Length: 308
Image (tube, rainbow, N blue to C red):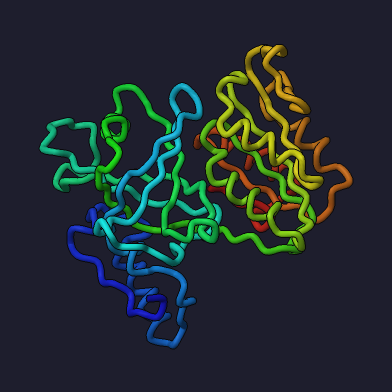
């Protein structure tokens, strides 16, 4: 399994649109590592999930989080009596690419008109080592009048989908930094959630995490109850930045609501007397740009931050 030669992508696996991380480039890098004798742990099922080839996964469960955000659980396509063991080769903070068939649509807004598929990336919220049946979970926000959202909304339990990955090069190393400061809005929480869980589940990792999470109101907080449970750990704190007055009658125990956007003054106060801090940023392009500029003005350079 883990020591198998990397799979060469087919022409269908490439969208031919000049992607920065083209599957043929990914395959070339993986092949060089394989040829040089770098082998992966045998428990990982590279035969089931590959960054160069789309693999079939069946939808097995859907959980509602907010009015427009859901968790989708997928398992490898297999025979009725086949038991699948092992771990999928992904780490906390990575994402997968879903292949969506255009189905002959004439929608001119869809990218790469000559290619029969579109690809959409979704962050993995599950932790691989906890999914020994090779399932994975992704968080997806559904938008109105969106071709990809319509496709996902119409999926039924048992439907087969095609995924490729994982992608994303962020890796957390215990003791690398004392403080991990996460800044996100909306679905930007998706890659952060498994990173938080992986750190808090490691008794030897004393990294202190502070999550600054911005959204419109408390009803739009994604994974709110999950984050509430994680807040019981001594080294995790969560602050919600809301643009609308919160309903205090629905406030959960120990939640911190701040009626403001995440801005320079809050970040400045947060990092005072906090040495050896690292910053993670995830959200809209404008949010990522704004936060990166704020950090740069505070003399926090690129080697101290990671933008998803």
